[in-house]
Image (cartoon, rainbow, N blue to C red):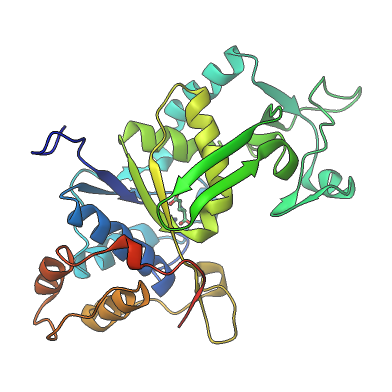
Length: 300
Ligand code: GLU
């Protein structure tokens, strides 16, 4: 679909994992992504990333959707659930395997860590199984072969990002030892299926982005453009995330949290207090400037 000026219509998404209720850090990502989409007259979608059902809190997906709705974050098309997408992930993995780009791996996390090859976000795979599984060992996972791959991205907020995939990540997992497809593969397959061309999300995913760009490339897909919002830290300097059990937002009183998120994203405050969530969004869609979003961390 094209917008009235002939350019491609922006399609963005918010992709929460239903491991708990929506907390302020996730709301901030949803607000940034929604404002950016609406300011561009674009489409905004929601995808529930419930690939790993063992990490799901029963009822959390519905709770998140209800909360988004109460915050006026209305999505435009049917919600996609990753738990229903296994066949699409399997097909992508088969396509990569057919190109000779994957290999079975027998290593456990502990064995990889013991090889002493630390990377910026965890150990870099030492290549143990890339030329075949050592005798007497069993395949556990399947990895993507990475050979000297330098990835460059222009992030709309963070600026130019360069990652040497081989040196900083290494051959990474596409199918995990528990049989589930890896987040990196699922997110790429789903972004392509939902025709997402603009991603605005938290900077905790910045390090994953070059892997996703590379997978898009290998699957013959154009990758979306990216904007990574600053991470929210709490008053002790720790990242605000679900795992730290940050307080859920209060859907019965959305306006204070919306205005707070808006301010933390560096946007100019509304001249008058909005009377309703709808009024807030009507104004916000006309006053969003991504260039005002701060790059670094933001403290609550
Ligand atoms: N499901 C991921 C999360 O909640 C987000 C994935 C993404 O935006 O690409 O952290």
